[in-house]
Length: 298
Ligand code: ATP
Ligand code: ZN
Image (cartoon, rainbow, N blue to C red):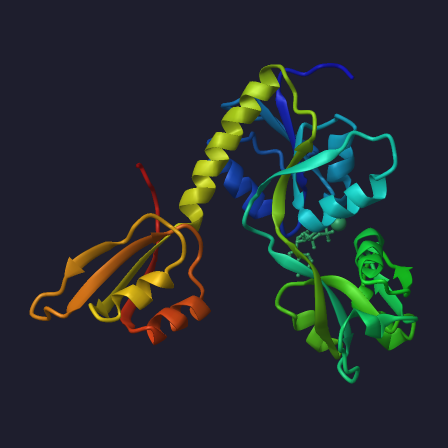
C-alpha cells in the first residue's frame, strides 16, 4: 500500500449519519471543500480528507487500508467484524462512540406471538440483514433457528410469509407498529462510532489521529454535559444527591427567605432522562431544570 501523509476518513455519502458526522467533524475544526456530490472531499485546514461512500462499504475500506478511519454504525462495524473473523484480515476497532445515530438491533415478532424469550424462536425463521450478529446471538442462547438474509425491507417478511420473526434496526418503533410487529428482544445497542484499524498509522497520520481524538473527546464531553439545577430541602439533600448522575461534586446555594431549602447545581457527564428526573423528584427535589452546556474550560 502506498503511504499517504494525509488522514482519510470514510463516511456515509447520504443517509442518516451524513449530517451529524459532518457536523461533528466541523466542530473538531475540520472543514472540507464543498464537493458533496463527489466521492472525495479535500480537507482545507488540517491534513484530513473525506471519502463519501455507502455505509456498508466503510469497514472494508478501512480494513483494506484505503481509509484510516470511518464513521459508521456499530451495527455495521460489528457485522463486518463477525464476517471477517477467521479470515486473515486486518482487524478493526471501535475508537470512540459518537453519540448520534442511536438505534437498537432487535428481534421483532408479530403482535399475536406471546414472546417469552429467545427459546421461543427455536425452529422458526428469522429475516435479517445482520446474519452474523443474529447467528451469534442465537448461538449464545442455544437456539436453532433459520436465518433468512435479506438486503432490505426486512419488516415485511412476516406478512409475506417468508419469516416468522425479524431481526432489524429499531429507533422509534414506528416501522414495526406499521407492520403489526413489536420489539421483543434487544441484541445490540447501536450508535455511530469512529472505527479504525487495530494497527493505527505510526507516521504523520498517527499524530493527526491523536490530535483528532483529543478534539473529539472535548467536543463529545461538552455535547453530552448537562447542568442540572434543582431545589431541595436540607432533609432530602442526601437522598437527592445519591440519585444524581455522575459528575463533579455539586454546588449548594442558600435560597433567600427559606433557610431549610437549598438550591443544588450539578454538572452531569451524560444526558439526564425523564426517568432520572422523576426519581430525583420523588426523593424530594423540585423546580428542576436541565440545561445544555455550550463551552467548558476547566
Ligand atoms: P447507504 O446508502 O449508505 O447504504 P443505508 O440505507 O444503509 O444507507 P441509513 O438508513 O442511512 O443507511 O442508516 C445508517 C445507519 O444509521 C444505520 O446503520 C444505523 O447505524 C443508524 N440508524 C439509526 N436509526 C436507524 C433506523 N431507525 N433505521 C436504520 N438505521 C438507523
Ligand atoms: Zn447501508
